[in-house]
Amino acid sequence: MDAWTVAVLEPNRFLGLHGLSDLMGRRLDPAQPRPSAYTEGLWGFQLKELPGGRTRLVIGGYETFRPRAARWLLAEWIFPPIV
Image 1 (spheres, one colour):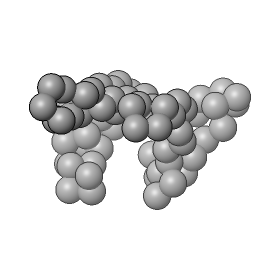
Image 2 (cartoon, rainbow, N blue to C red):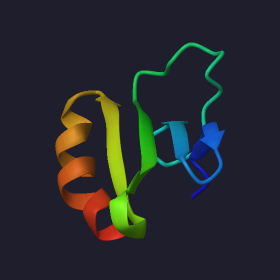
Image 3 (cartoon, rainbow, N blue to C red):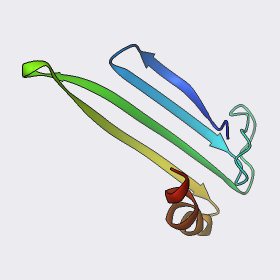
């Protein structure tokens, strides 16, 4: 599935991903109007340097599903085994 694009990249520090796809996982054009059923998300992955040569990975994101009822099925049952 090729549903995510790199929105921001700062090598060795930050990766931002944007995803916009229909519920079958096909990428949608963000310049077009959203269909009635889709999922869209923005996720960030930041590496923070810590003392002692250690590194912390900080992850944050947001995802929405339309229609809202699709969230329960996708986020609770389908995505976890895939991810």
